[in-house]
Length: 82
Image (cartoon, rainbow, N blue to C red; front, side):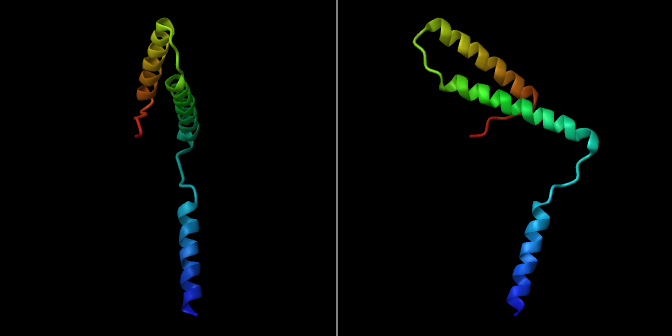
């Protein structure tokens, strides 16, 4: 019978761990905006990396855009996740 009590305790612990942690109210909007910017820039970066072209001018433009995006991401505190 103690097994049922132990499993309930584990479930309760998991539920508590899954609950969102309190965050200072002033930072919530800033954090959400930063996360949105990082997601948008990451998607742009992935699109550029997946693009194939034979045109040297297009490759040059894509390379410059990639550098710009990675600079913006680093300013937002983003690091490459391998």
